[in-house]
Amino acid sequence: MRVLVIGAGEVGTSIAQDLAGTHEVVVVDRDEELVEELQYSIDVLSIAGDGTSLDTLERAGVTDADMLIACTDVDETNIVACATASAVGDAFTIARVKRPSFLDTWERANGAFGVDYMVCTDLLTADTVVNVASLPSAHDADWFAGGTVQIAEFAIPEGSDLCGQTVEEADRFDSLTFVGVLRDGDVEIASGETVLEAGSYVVVVGTPSDVLAFADELVPGEVPEREDVVIVGGSEIGFQCATLFEERGFSPRLIEQERSRARWLAEKLPKTVVLQSDATDVGFLAREHIDTADVVVAALGSDEQNLLICLLAKRLGANRTIAIVEHTAYVDLFETVGIDVAVSPREVTAEQITRFTSEGQMEKISLIHHDRAEAIEVQIDAENVFVGRPINEAVTDLPTGVVIGAITRGEEYVTPRGDTVIEEGDHLVIFAETERVAKITSLL
Image (cartoon, rainbow, N blue to C red; front, side, top):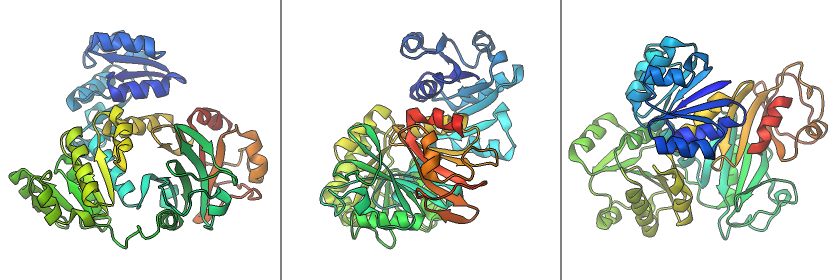
């Protein structure tokens, strides 16, 4: 497949890297130096030029392209690039936008602007934040099989009762499977002998109730009946986070310094307590009992401010902090200095687009721990070679570094064990190292 990527920023570069191994990729950007650098760092054709210009797009081969992904930082540029491509060719077009208003228009008009698929960065970021915040102690979380199966990544803290236990010893849940352990940047597929160590991350797959029970087992007493959530910053992301929290039954507190914005937020968020103040005022944070907060989400306008807010919140006693990080390179740094979860809007957008372009016969893809591993959902049809075979036999045909984490059979959740027989129509949730996924999909 020939794919045109408009924009060689963090999002475009990440997408190009992910697709270059399996597709013919052409990257277009106005920055000549960036284009030249990309030419040598990734095996793609790069062209310097305006992605909204028909001349530039024709030089990039838009009439022969199968897909065009417009992912610059400017919404209007992305929409125009898609519209131009649609006018002169048959490429499937994907546009990245920040403003939800464009997404609303596109959805209501059934594919307006010549865009076949639209990704809204702010909504995706808010959804990621709320998914993680809604599961105590989680570093990442996602759902499969219509919400029947949950996958979650947890950091193993010092002092946890699970530290030093093997997976076999820790496996006390009927509908939960330990699928992976990540430490020092390496992915280890979990086996019964795998030891859970402080400072590493464990990935589990199971029913939402058992995943929640595991969270409580990991850090006893930290799973409250209803979490106290504080959002700092009434930005679009902060507003969308509050909206999603309200939809899930939470009543968050939101701190916004600008008076008119705070008034607007209070009118739009009936279940949210909006506080108009400077969130860097330690006295204010103490008076508002930030120390009792289960989760503090920092969604201010700069990475530095978000880092400061999270550090202040942790110092005052907040249980968990989540920071929005615009510069993807800072994500690991934030988590190294003590921020519990750092969410990069650019990273979640690149992941979403990569998922969409890679799905094919897969029902869903979830990228784990900044793309070090992946979980995929696959439906087994009658022609599949695994039908009628027990798992311990079927996995011999899969590459190493792969584990079946869950099976859903109609409305039934099936905990995968070695003697579990795979049936036609089953949905398998498979966890694997990222480099193994292409081989898995070719087999399934």
